[in-house]
Image 1 (tube, helix red, strand yellow):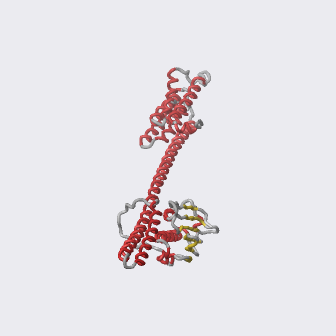
Image 2: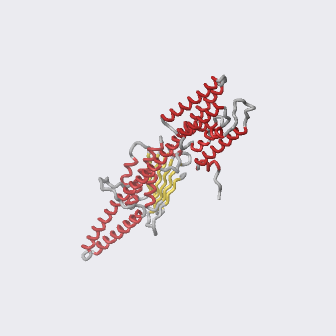
Image 3: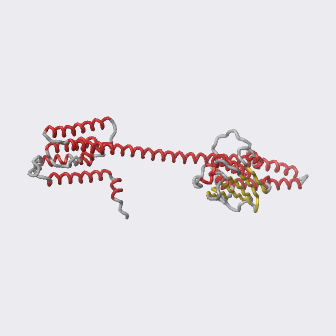
Length: 405
């Protein structure tokens, strides 16, 4: 088992760290008091006794509670050290006061802290005034002590503000992440709802055709068997196509619980020219193959994919000189390429937005694959491949976001 790093352990156990700090300062203060200069060396110093030891302990031991009661600790420690110096007792020599004042700045706020600092300042001034009355020239010690205590307090207060700022940034980042995840889920749900609505229109149309053809076959079964056979063939083809479309989306969509609303006409490739001839983009198109023979589910999805790709060009590509849209049917697959020469190639392809996710949802529902990313030499490309034949097993679409050649 790996042992924790000492610094990390102290950060995770602040009470233990404070106790250790208080113990070290106490040992140093007692050593200076008991084994320092004797009265023979310095007539101003007095012999260690039980009450001098207690006074030294009061100036150091409370540091163990410096985070819990910082203002009380500061008052005790400074009072004890000022009293020790006034009485000529060697001890922590204001080390405990520096730590206590720093802790008060780092862990307290408000007017009470200001009043405590004022009391401490009065005690320090009184100490040096008493020394001056006693004939000692302590101006250098007074200035240096004041600077050290003020500096300790300011450093502690700045660290407290920094901790609060870091905590606030972390909270904001966590909240933004939650909101982004929620928004992403809402966008995906909205996209799936739209796919479900498009599919509803397709299925409703197919079922209507099948009902009409079944009625025609029933009426002509005896008098016109050839027409009845043709109607039954149409029912079979329509049923197979509808089953394919249903199976392609049932693995992706959830139950559509959206409330009914006003629906626009279902788009298809017949309306593709409306996307291309908007006038705000220099779009050129290439079509190879009979698009009218495509199943309606594929036609709707391809329309949406081209629509989203062109929307991304408008949002992210910047100035472009050419945008190429190509639809090709070959080897039983429909290939859709949307390329531009804008600045989208400078983007990080791993940070795809909701539009790309929506395209991936549609392509995966059809058992196809999609690659989107920067082009060599600049620009952006979206390349989609969708099978036209009915899959033999469960549909599993693949998506990729990478450099596209």
